[in-house]
Length: 164
Image (cartoon, rainbow, N blue to C red; front, top):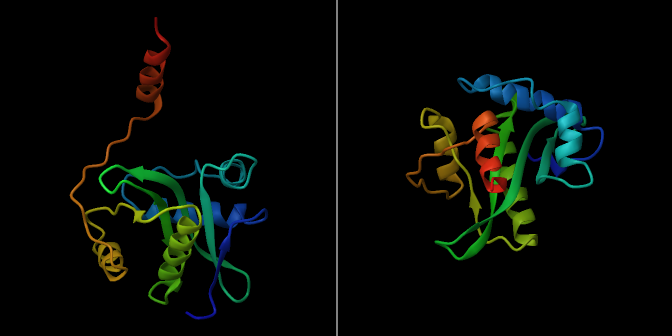
């Protein structure tokens, strides 16, 4: 899709990005929806202290058809900075047209501008389409098991640092 344009997210993109994120989470089994709102997009990606990078893919008519989020990371086994892709999503009607690749290329370029030498991301084991796409980008799978400490468990763990 040569007419797609990838750019940094900007004010006014919040409703479309939140809707795309809701679609992503709805496609994934057991994912929560409704938490990533236009307000959280504004606060966490377009505000004064962004949590990371927000890239959007825009169709010729200005409609947002995909997005990616990313943040800087460091991998000691490579001894280098990298960019971790948190979300990558393309609306189903626009898949297999180069939109995802354009978002990943833009993320790689943005990472390189920030001193990154690699991209890192995860894929669900059952998502064969995503795994095949990532391999076409030159990605290679690494056997990892991701963990998340959330909600009450996170709060309790953080509280241990301030306990006497």
